[in-house]
Length: 422
Image (tube, rainbow, N blue to C red; front, top):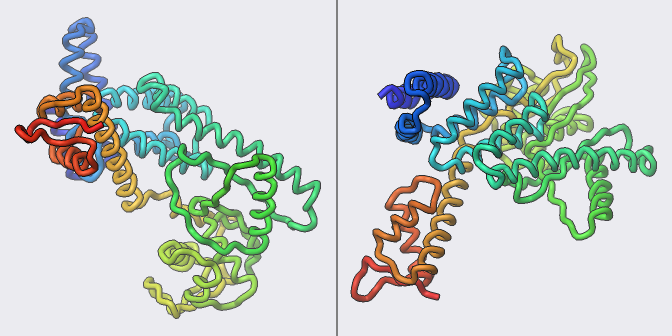
């Protein structure tokens, strides 16, 4: 009852951090009880596990417990997440989070969200430390197996290799293009397709200073790695811009989209929204989000006419020459660090699609071995093979899909019996 009450309380107020802390306290309490009062008896361990499995896998509102655990790990592992925690306290808390994963049916949800958050921390240099990231992956590997963490290992390896590639490229630039490419410092992250979250490719017309670097790097990399392909993903790219305002010099930490928009005003005093879209090629939704963050937020780098919060095609933007701030380096790209509901929905959708493929594969694998099977026996065998919960209605849809695609057929005399079609 205590566990169900915690789940219901969380579903009502959506306080994920408090929810996970509550789970940890409850787990510590009953684990201590089993050890002290029942001498760690396996039977009581089994009963405790069954109870935790029962309530941890119940619906918790908009987000599942698995997703909440991944979000909680992100809070612990990113800079500024748990300001009062020492390294030792953080490590102990992560141990307890991993212990809770034993009761989660369908760790694929946790994996998807953890990988998404890890990618954000690595690409944007927001991790408390790489050692902490490696330590957490080791914990997950020990608890869930090497296959669970194989992609996470590649992500860390990619970042190490990217540093080597960037240093080598900078030396190449220094020796061959120092005067031609000017005073621009570029760091490139080369990520292995298939191991990182799927990023939506976006068009972007880079300023000449950056496009020259991009083409030079492409030629440099492909000559060293013959047969490979490069595609550019701008969504999480960031820049440091040196800005000269009337009231002093500043450094602006901006997303690439924000930076490209700001750089347009080196050659123009006033631009309409439509002008900015035509000159940058940024997708409409991203461009509007970037413009709002530059003109409506506290850091008004751009002035907007009219100053209303709504954006229209004929709105006019200009540089706020009187911009001032007590900080020398000003962060504009905090908006990139926030997961949107849309991103979370897309991640859940990808997990759901992956599960459909796994159900299909399990059905075909079972039927290929058994050749002919009753519906109830097929369902029973699927439950033993798959490590995530699924609804009977979803399973029925997958069976119907396989029948339509002629992997299976129903027995002519008994519709409850399926026959494998070789």
